[in-house]
Amino acid sequence: MSNQTLRPVAIAGTGSYLPEKVLTNADLQRMVETSDEWITERTGIKERRIAAKHEATSDLAIAAGREALANAGVEAADLDLIIVATVTPDMAFPATACFVQKALGAPKATCFDVSAACSGFLYGMELARQFIATGSAERALVIGADKLSAIIDWTDRNTCVLFGDGAGAAVLQPAGEGSGEILSAYSGSNGNLDEILNVPGGGSRNPLTPETIGGKSNTMKMAGREVYRHAVQTMMSATKEAIARAGLTPDDIECFIPHQANLRIIETIADKLHIPMERFFVNLQAYGNTSAAAVAIALDEAQRSGRIKRGDHILMVVFGGGLTWAS
Ligand code: UT7
Image (cartoon, rainbow, N blue to C red; front, side):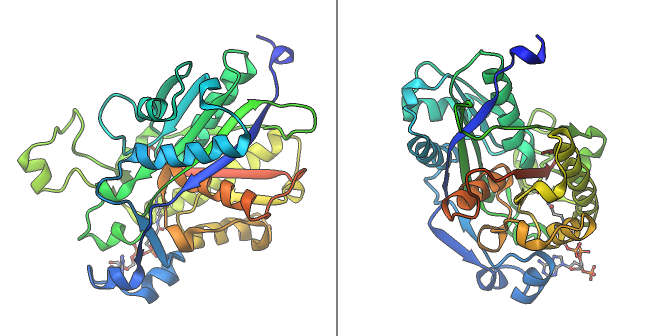
């Protein structure tokens, strides 16, 4: 299909949901050998939200999805597509998106999950954009949702201080008169670096057994420094690429919404690209790294707080296990 027949696509509304329970750095100090000073200096994180026992990833996703639909003025019954980006699905199958469909009442929607770790929300957005641009769908709900607390080793200080639970969502539809528009997208992956960030157990390679559980291989493993280095490199190049593809320059971007993993990663990117930190939206101090939800929650908060206004150019950029990245 030629580009001329593709329809421009807009974000019609956003939503987010954060569980009530707050876990502070002081709380973590009582759980592992760490300190508020270390966590704040090395990451910028002060607290994170933890889902209740009875809350699964779909519960977070449903709440964020409801808010996005209300914000967009779109009925669930009119959705043609629901995509949930997550690495913590409720079950191996059905897809978490099917649970969202059931709760929201969206009988027309095709529903599936995307597995791209922290990059999943932008992978899902691009998929939805393609469905709508080609005319295969009119209205899509894309949700980034993760309950990372379920796959964290709460005795491993290298990882447990970094992450939190949450969900963010966006409704996409054809761009209308005067609405915004997704100007460009870019993504990439590097499966050769699978081992620096993964959950090795619990899948078909190492199914759940008393041994895998005892060895905690069903929890997240991360080579922090390696991941950090690749995060800076790939988020910088992805930022430049999406801006170039839109025919813009970094100066044209009023608001940068990066993956919320570590304040130092964001500051390094800002410094290297000569972009003032004021133009970066940061909320990781309150939520930590919520994986696929992070950039989606940030987009919603930036919108609701008035940080982004009609006519602004926004750049979202993400990075995660796989490795994966997108902008
Ligand atoms: O969504 C994508 C996924 N993840 C990321 O983007 C994370 C990327 N990586 C990072 O953000 C950083 O590498 C970390 C925050 C994970 C770690 O910061 P760092 O400056 O790279 O520290 P490090 O791993 O080099 O560790 C420095 C020291 C070590 O002690 P020694 O070996 O120097 O004695 C660690 O054992 O800090 C120690 N350490 C801690 N100390 C107190 C590691 N975690 C902690 C902790 N509290 N929680």
